[in-house]
Each structure stands twice: as structure tokens, then as C-alpha cells.
Length: 274
Ligand SMILES: Cc1cc2nc3c(=O)[nH]c(=O)nc-3n(C[C@H](O)[C@H](O)[C@H](O)COP(=O)(O)O)c2cc1C
Image (cartoon, rainbow, N blue to C red; front, side, top):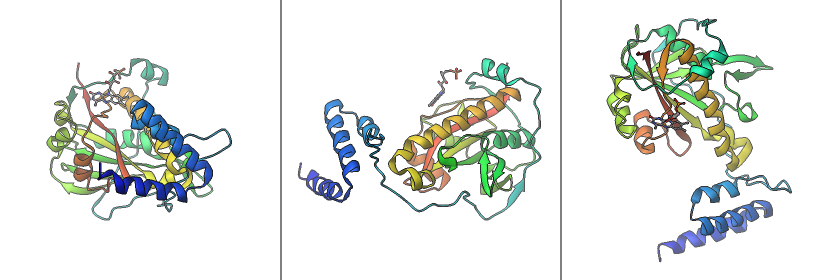
């Protein structure tokens, strides 16, 4: 119990610093935590917009910019396909989570999936717009690609640069076994010729929406994930979204700071089998 003393002290200090609306939301959230024993409910209540417009607006980090750019060897992706010949309604109706993968994939398949999932599909007064809708158009998502078997690409971990529609090689070597370990050993992961790992740069969304931004980054991600499913479906490929992973292990694998860049989903991709 003594270990709790500094936490109570810290909480008292925090409450005294917050403006009245935020303090009320946090106190309501704490009461719900005690009642339900579910920390998710504490977050849910604390990140609500109250009927009087009260809002928990911490943290309010600085805007980190639209693009996370890595230096290094850059691979230009081919132009994404302009049409697949599969009607979007058909793709939605036939979409399934598929856990068997053939390979290899082509660079154009990777290019097409990335572009129509999280690529820049327009600009408005100097502001990029993406294939996925985004709260406040703040675009928190980053896409990494683990490659084991893609024609024209050496195995390794890559980062997608949407501004130039390129891949930047971050690390050489096949990491699919490590990725499988990070995904709670789900045994189909290492068989995929490629996997997209979506992360969210929380500060992009929190810079405007404060703590409510945590809800929004996952809504943003859900829309991008569905894009990936539908493009894979239209191209005759297979994918599944994985939400079960060891956060720390995945962050280490990607070499990202897990406090601000949050892993959201892993999507193995391969040729459809059967
Ligand atoms: C948020 C989320 C997390 C998921 N995590 C996993 C996962 O870790 N492993 C897995 O095999 N499938 C995972 N799935 C896929 C679901 O199992 C799948 O969508 C569900 O069984 C319905 O099947 P369908 O997608 O073919 O319609 C996840 C789906 C969602 C939406």
C-alpha cells in the first residue's frame, strides 16, 4: 500500500492543475473504475466530451508534422494499379480473414496495397489527404513493411514514405519469425511473404484532440485496415488483421518509442491459396 502513496500524491497534484471540466471528467472516470474495475471505462469516461463541452485536453503535444522520414536507401515503388476489375461491392461481400499465404508477391502488389490503404490521394491547399478518412485530417498512421519474398526487394524491414511513394530500407534480413513471436506465436505469420505493420503517431492527433485522440487513432486505423482488406481481396491476395501482439516486443522490432508511436495492427499478406 505504501507504494500507492506517491501515486495518490501525484494524482492530487494533477487534479489541482486541471481546469474544472477536465477535473470533473477524470473524477467521474475514477469513480467508474472503482465501480466496474475496468480501466477501459476510466479512459472512456475521461475522454468523453461532456454535455457542457468539457474536455480532457491533456496531453497537448507539439504537432510532429505529417511525415516521419527516415534517411537511407530508398526504393521507388511502381505506379499503383488504376483499376482491379473487381467491383467494390463484390470485394466487400467476399472479404474474409485469410491465414494461408502463397508467394512471392510483386512490387506492384505492395505498391497498390500501400497506396490505396494509407497513400496520399489528394492535396488541399498544401494539406495532404489520404486513402483513409482521418479525424481532423491529422493522419496519425505510419506503415512499416516486413518483407521475406517480394520480387525485386531484398528481405528486410521497410518504412513506407507516402509523400514520395517509396520504401526506405530500415534493416536487412528476414524478420518474419520475430514478427510471429511478437504476434503471440500465431503460426501463420512467418509463412507470409510480407506483412504491413500499422502504427499511430499519437502526438499528431493528440496535438488537437488531447486524450480523446487515443479513440480517434484507432478509428483512423480501422478504416485503413479495411482498405487493406478490400484491396487485397480485389487483387486476389490474402490478409488478416492481427490485434494480438506483445506491444513492447513489436516496438523493439520496429525500433520505435512505444510511448508516442503506438503499434496498432499487423497484417500478413500473401497470394490467396485455394
Ligand atoms: C481488432 C481485431 C483484432 C483481430 N485480431 C486477430 C488476431 O490477433 N489473430 C487472428 O487470427 N485474427 C484476428 N482478427 C480477425 C478476426 O478473427 C476476424 O475478423 C473474425 O473472425 C471474422 O472473420 P472475417 O474477418 O473473415 O469476417 C482480428 C480482427 C479484428 C477486427
